[in-house]
Image (cartoon, rainbow, N blue to C red; front, side, top):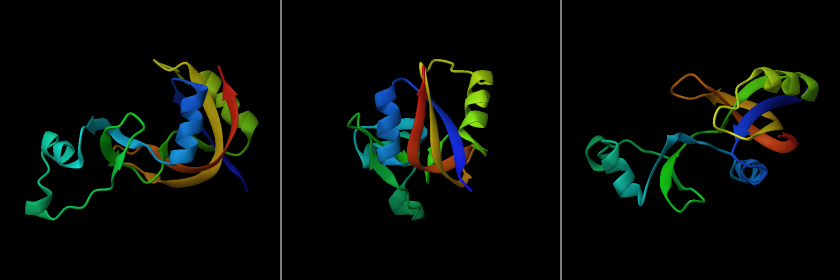
Length: 124
């Protein structure tokens, strides 16, 4: 059975970019290089052996990639996801995307992550 997820963003193009990328960045913390990123947030990879999935964002900076996109769901239908988007808060964002995909996991802050397959609808 299909699952649907709601994600808010700054533009319809960014929703498409999110679909192509397939993952979010932890707390959207960025820096100019992987080394600078680790140093900025207090990680010493050489000393503690911790491995991070560090990826380059379209803004040219580097961040800690999560194993999916942040969003709300899962919902059983597009209509259910759209109804939920009406009750949600766009906050600083101007558009809402409804994606088809599958649940991935929870991030460190217990937020839902999902793996998108299709951007079904853009609202706003």
